[in-house]
Amino acid sequence: MKCKKCGEKAVIKLRAHNISLCAPHFQEFFERRVSEAIKKYSLLSLHDKILVAVSGGKDSLNTWFLLKKLGYKADALHIDLGIDEYSKKSREKTEKFAHKIKGNLKIVELKEEVGFTLPHLAKREGRKACATCGLIKRYLMNREALNGSYSAIATGHNLDDETAVLLSNLLNWKMGYLGRQSPLLPSWHPKLAKKIKPLCEVTERESAAYAILNQIDYIYEDCPFSQGATTIFLKGILNQIEEKSPGTKIRFYREFQQKARSLFEEEKMSLSECPTCGLPTTHPPCAFCRLKSRLLQKEGKSK
Image 1: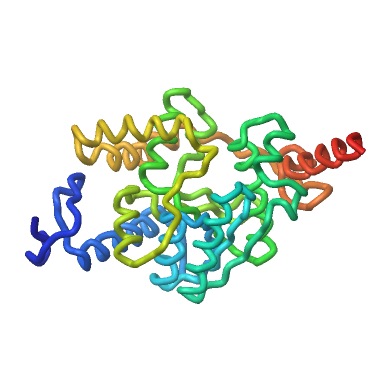
Image 2: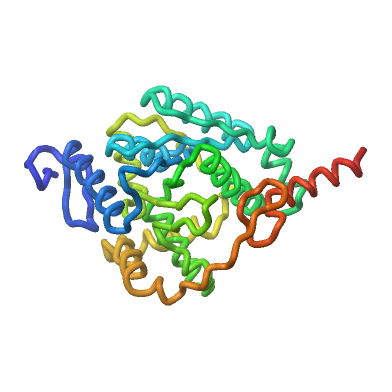
C-alpha cells in the first residue's frame, strides 16, 4: 500500500476519500480537514481566546494540540469527576500532556464543588450518571470560560460522535436538539461563550491515528458509565453502513448541516441570570445551583 501523494509506504487507508497516505501526508490531510472545517463553519478567528474541554482522551487532546499548532490562543479545562481509577488516569494523562506542550491547564474537582464524586452524586440524586455529568460539565465550562474571559469553548466531538447523535435525534424527532446540532453554537448572552467542535469532520479512527503519529499519550478506556449507551450502539450501525458505502458518515453530516438543520431551528428562549451564581439560565435558579441546594437540604436532613 503506497501513499497516493508521494509513493512512499502508506500508514493508513481512507476509504471514504479513496486514498492511502504516508505519515507526513496523513498529518497534513488531518490538519487541513480541521482547518477547512473551522473556516467553512466560521468557528474561530485568530482573535478568539479558546478554552478547550479536555478529558484525557485522544479527541480532546488532539483538539488542544492542533488549535495551538494552528496559532490559536488555546488553554484547557479538565473536570475531575472522581470516577475511581478512570478519573485518576484521565487526569494524569491530561496533566502530563499539558506539561509536554507547555499549555495552561485548569483543573476543577467535582468533589470540591459539590462535596461528592460523580458516582456518589448520581446515586444520591437517583438519576443516570450521564445526565448529571452533562449538567455539571456544561455549567463548569460556562463558568470557567466567563471567569477566564474566553470567547469560545472547544470540545473534541468527532464525526462518529456527531453522526451517532444526529441519527438518534432524527429517529426520535427531537426538534430542539436537531436545531442545535451544529459545529458552532453562537453566544446569545454576554456571559456565555460560543461552543465549537473543530474535529466535527474527522472520524474517530483518523483522530486515533493522528494522536499516535504525534505521540500523544491518551486514555484508551471509555467512561465506565458509557457502557450500554445508545450512541455506542448507533456508532456500530453507522460503521456497518460505512463499510458497505464509504463516505456515508461525512455525506450524512454535511448534507444535514447544509440542507436540513435550518428547518429545525427554533426561536431562542430568553435568558435571565441565576440569582445565586449569576450565570445565564432559562429557569432561575440555574440547574447547577438547584442541584447544590438539594444536596444541602439532604445533608441537613441526614444530620
